[in-house]
Structure formats: structure tokens, C-alpha cells
Amino acid sequence: MPQSTPDARTNRRTVWQRWLGGLAIGVLFTWWSSRSWPLDRLFSGSLSVGRDAHGDLAVRLIGQSGSENWSLDLRNLAIYFVCLTIIHWLRVLRWHPLLEPYARVPIAALNRAGAVGFMAVFLLPLRLGELSRPLMLGRKHAGHPPVPFAAGLATVALERVLDGLTVTALLFVVLFEVHPATLARHPGIAQAAWIAGAVFLSAISGLTAVLVARDFTLRWTRRILGAIAPSMTDKLLGLVTAFVDGLAVLKSPWHVVQFIGITIVYWGVNGLGIWLMARGFGLDLPVIAGYAMMCFVVVGMMIPNAPANAGSFWYFLLLPATLYGVDDQSPRAVAFGLGLWFVQTVQVTLFGLWGSWADARAMARHSRPELPAVDTQQN
Image (cartoon, rainbow, N blue to C red):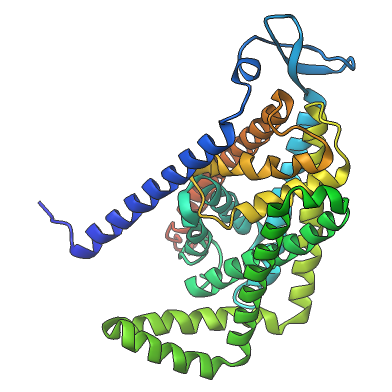
């Protein structure tokens, strides 16, 4: 019977540690956010489909007293699912210009890898899913030239950093629109914006410095790695070298312009969709509140995430609600936070399962040996 190698045992232990750490984070944020939830009005009652107070078809929870605890307009739900589908395709399309310098990957292959990767990032703890897209694009028999793993990973890192800068800049714009007296009553919100800005600005500065001063970076990397892990220096340095080469897309202004343009549309649709779902739950919020909630979810994801982002997702989503006069502990607000998380979980899981099925079919099709041509001419 084969025995596990030390490396295999270490890898399994690391994975288990990350899962346990992610679960602990999820339990902490779930407890933290639900301490003041009105559970009796949030879950107790009669759930039915009928007309809400505005006469629209909705899912409604009627309490014991006969009053409506919360409702969800089904029209808004359908529109939001369309928004999530658009968001999925925008995420796939904006990845294309980042990969183009290394390999011409068909959109169909990007769609499959994106569907699986987006599901993995959302469902797996501590950002473990970020590796799935580079791994999928680096395989043979995928219907396109393999993309080096480090290059694919560099494009994912670049996505995260530029997304962070975009959302942080938008967060400052959103907070600028809030009355100073209101913002002064919530100092933690402004502090979170400054911390997020500092983190993402440092990250993009580091990536730019690596690209500009390649030899200097590699020389100091070798010195640092040699002092910390001399036996692994060459292996790790090879990965760092490939990663640095993977940032070459920054040298192409056209690719960067394409990525930034699609990113602006992507985040625009994202915030609009959140606002529509809030309206669907009967929350009277301005459009800008949807973008504030979106920004806080992204900033919250800087913290290592739990499986499916449970706990931290709705905690950070509802954090800025009080800036716009909404009680973040009311049944409608909490139902909105949980509902938005549930819809996103269902959407990304369905798309990811389809991507896994489509990818298996594509791999099987491209790995078949080509049959020799048959000469049909008669002698």
C-alpha cells in the first residue's frame, strides 16, 4: 500500500488548516453580525408568493400578527440575475486582454475557466480558488496553447490589485457624498477606506517597481530567499522570474485600456444590481448606496474569507446602510443581506458546475488521438 510522502502530508495539513481558519472566520462574523437580528420577525411566519404593498408579485413573509415582515419583488430578483450574468461575461472578457500577450485563448475556454474559477474563489476559504484559473489554462489538450502558470497567476494578481484601486477610489467618491456630520458619527467607515487605499496603492506600487526594476528585484529576492530557505532558492526564484515576466501586460497601453474600460462597466453594473435588489426588498435607498455597499464588500474581502464568504459578506454589505438612514438590523435589511448573498451563491455555483461539465467535455474532445486519413480512392 503506497505511503504518503512528507510533502503530501504537509500539503494536506495546510489545506485543513486553511479550511478550519476559514470556518472560524465565518463563525466569528456570523455571530458578530447576527447578535441583534430580529430572528422572530426574520424567519418566523408564513412564507408565500403574492402581491406586496405596491401590488407587485413578490415573495412575502407574513408574521403572526398578519403584518408583512419583509418581501422581495420577483421582478427585481429576475433583473438582478440578468445583472449577475452580465457581470460574469464582463469578468471573462476583461481577462482576455491580460492574457493576450502570452497566448491566444478562445473566449469559450476563458468562459469555462472563469466559471469554475469564480465559483472556486467564492466557495473556497482564504482565496484558495485564485489558483484554479491559472491551473486550468496551463493544461494541455484544453483547445489552446498552454499559458504558463506564473503568467496566469500574474494576471489574476493584477486583476485583484486594479480592482482594489478602482473600488477604493469609488469608495472615497461615495463617502464624499455623505454629509460630514453623518460620517463623523461612524469614524470606522472612513478609517476602513483609508486602510484599503493604503493597501492597494502599496500593492500596485510594488508591482510597478518589480516591472521597472527587474534585475534589482530579482537580485534582492535571491539574497532574501538565500537567507531564509537556501535549499528552495532556485525553485522559488524561477517562480518569481516567471511572475515578473507575467506582468509584461503593463507594457502594453492598449491592453491596459481595454481592461480598465471593461472594469468600469463591470463595477457599474455590479453596484446598480445591488441597488435594484435593495429596492426589491423595499429598502428606500439612493443609487449611490448600492455602490457604497459594493465597495464595503470588496474592502471586507481583504480579510481572509470563510467558505462562500459566509458572515463577512452580509456584515460588510450592511455596514454603510446607516449612512443612508436604514437600520441595518431591521428585518428587511437583514433579509436583503442574506438574500443577496444567497442569490450570488446560487448563481456562481450553477455557472461553476456548468463550467466543470463543459470543461470535462472539451478536455475529452481535444485529448482524442487524431485518426489517420483513409484513402477512399480505388486502385
